[in-house]
Length: 241
Image (cartoon, rainbow, N blue to C red; front, top):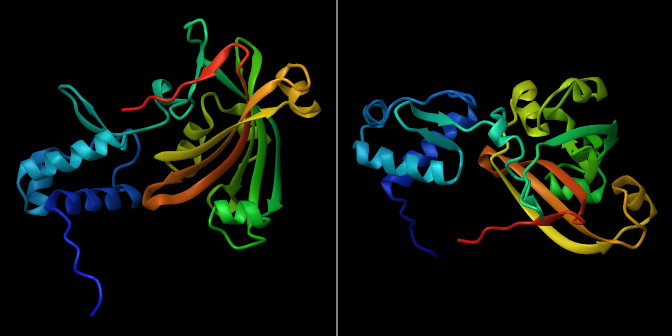
């Protein structure tokens, strides 16, 4: 025999069961989950154990506690959460709403890099879209986004243009895909001609290249995006605890 048995604290086991219920759609984004007392009865554990599991899920931003109202499944449909993963902040401190403007949407087959990033077979069907994020009608972010078509069938330019809010709120509302976390890689680049024209900067200007993979429950990758960020009037903010 090799290795040793692993032990998972009881509250972590309850957390895993709650995540499974979320993944299976028992409680949809925006819905209230049962009370701690009800969940304690359901899982035959103490309320303290349930509370500790919920505390971790709230820290992971899968659940949201609302004073006097209960605990709810987090949702990107809340305007306060529209751009939850966006780390750009204005240099002057004046926060203005971002606006997502679609440019293109087409079907493709996964090449080696999208297949690897999305954990898909080579040649799997994809939906690819290009969009810009505008602040005060100025292009600040240009994204190219890759999605597994299996989970986003029917997504097209008409749907993108008609939707108000973030892409993640659209993915959640129309396709039942709830992004719960994202991983980014950031590096400095110089604007090429296309990037400069898109973001309204001089060719050769410094930009941030941001590559993101977004995940749903079960750590399943659902989106790979490559973005260019202009930092003329904005900075990339990363809070460290």
